[in-house]
Length: 123
Image (spheres, rainbow, N blue to C red):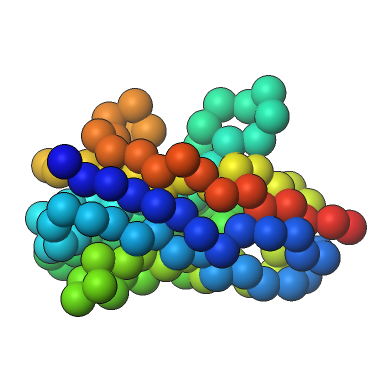
């Protein structure tokens, strides 16, 4: 099993920054795709960013490209999401997720999930 715990959410003003952390237990990220997703009230869960541990390949949603950065610290089984230039539209619960196998941005195919951390951006 893989357990994921997010932290780092909070309330920030538009234009500010936050860094989210996802601490994983069970195994390293070398054989997994690690993703960040977010869900706002009344909205479907959407892809934000992902990283493949074996290659360090990363991918981002167009809405966050250039503002957010995902990274992995394999030695501590931790994935980070650095969020800069935050906008009110970024307000959501942010979830860390993991899966084995092929790369995908489809949240339905991710196997393991954290419970989420709230990010609120005020304008």
